[in-house]
Image 1 (spheres, rainbow, N blue to C red):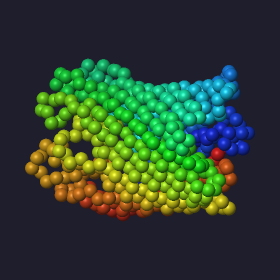
Image 2: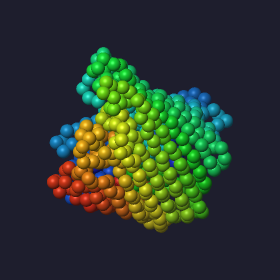
Image 3: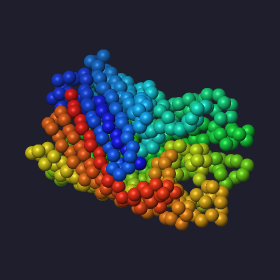
Image 4: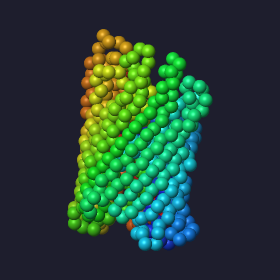
Length: 466
């Protein structure tokens, strides 16, 4: 489907990162515009307006300050309907003792509407738990949930604890009930160049409706752990110009447009992270209804290298099919996959490089990617044991494509040309033009629509900073 996204974003950067920020110590503003079209050959139009503003108070007491950001999304559909969505607005109190460094402190953050900034995992697209799945009387799905976080940050480590909650409907009693997600984690520099990090979470999903109809009150839940080993040397290396890889992150505009330093010499970072889940879901292999644990995992290896003005990025990502559908949780919701469904994990390999020309402040680059989408054989899922195998591709937690019987999944190939242009410290522009070859399109159940296997698309972003 063709998608046009035109948006404006206001968000804050580091308060003292530029002369403009120093001139206005208590407020920082960014205005960003986005236009995106994944397929130039098809029709469809949507627009998004992203508004946000970060404020910082004067000192409220010895070492005590307050911060706030209001961040909203305004969307327009093809029919002209408008809808608002919070983008993880927050209030924060930060206390820093006089003897601590500028980046150290103890903070309490409250996210009153949605808490997608709180999650397990460390970098996109290997994060998990940004939303909380709940069942209500009118709908079921991943919904925004209020949350809060307490965090201690020191020069050589950090620790945090966080929680988010949403009100769902008990499928057995029909009464509202509160569902929660709690998490905690820490990180420490075990060596000047190496940091170890770990975190855990537990999530309540509510009563399983199918079993409630049988008079049984069985609850779905998820336990999860994450860990990362990070090696870093030299100046920080920012993400590549790759909007599609980071678009699910509510801080995407802040991260992509963060100023990049080129001090010369060699900088490098390598990280290996993994997340493992255990979910209690309905067992579809037991006629009378029961629950069982279903595992899921994601592993990501990321590497970044900077040599003078050259940057190189690489990513290898493995996500099991159960991990992709775990946010729902299950497929269908609250159900584990039947045994022997031929689950196949997603594998993503991506590499890119860009070069910064200091004179004109231009940074052109190139990204190439191959993705083997997660898939499963739905023969047992639909209860037709003698049917010819039909694979279903999982393109997201609730996005899937059924291939025609006998077809196998094929890798999706992408090539992307990127460009960043910085006009001083106050204005930046980014663009990407990409070609996608998806042999899985045109051989699915919707191939009568003439959906091409090859598509062209682009993204363009502008940002002004005040």
